[in-house]
Image 1 (cartoon, rainbow, N blue to C red):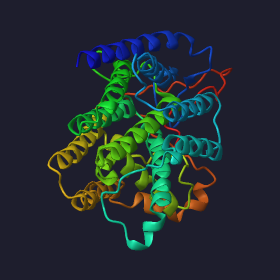
Image 2: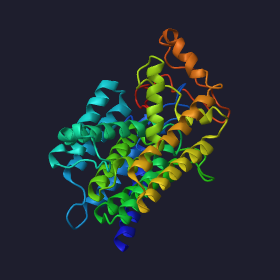
Image 3: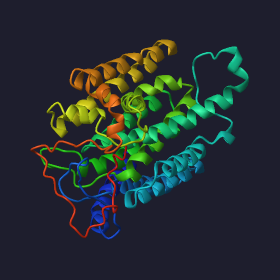
Image 4: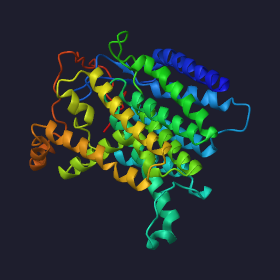
Length: 389
């Protein structure tokens, strides 16, 4: 316990210290975000929060005197993800290049050569038994890529992506501790502490009116990759059904799947940027950014708690898997009825030909947000807000 506390305090302190330092050099490195018609924030904000988090996490974990708790493929996969994210923060990459790099990182993280993959906890049909390893490996790779993009998509308002990561890591630590996976508890709580150091500068509070720093694509995508890896490792090491662990990341996953379905229905690319995320819909219902973040974090904590409780009482894997339809249905109902009685996105699908001429719908400027355009001589591609899709 003493080791956990000291390592967590070190990770939190180093993360906060690096943020203070990196904020001063972010402009020189072109790692800043300018507001525009979709990214409604006040002024120019540094995009180096993710770098600080994972630099602090790596420093603390790699100085452990005993055998490394995380395999080499974990560090390589995260390094690729964060490098691609930094490049995307400075100069917008195409969706094809981003996805290609994410698949490479996912394959490395899953590491099919290790001979182990996710645990279903549910009997597969006999026809799939011969290809079960290949099938589950593909599912694991797609899950990593999906969660990378899920965390990137939810990073749209102050404190949301970092707070969602903190909630997920908390429940993962509880499950790992309950199942006796001590080799995973320390990395999880150290990463949680590093994220907490970042949230001190990013989460709105009575002391912080607006975020002083953003995760950037480097931070949001790497958080998604790390959490996906930890879920897969936890499933493998403790034989917990992968579908049950999905409860811990239910809100980001469901919101991403919902967005993909709605965009495809409207005849648009699933990676096309818009303002149809769950947090946008809440903001459009006159919720403040702080309230919106708190509502989504509460929902994430509630879903994670259900998953953790189901694991503790050893509930049926079938029951826990089918029960995921409940938050899915609740999310779908909210999306449908929050857009002008469910007609908004349907009407968009019938006017897609016109929308293609201007795929970015005008974003309403809220009274509490000051829209400050970049200076005339600013490089508009110097930084991309982490909510890239």
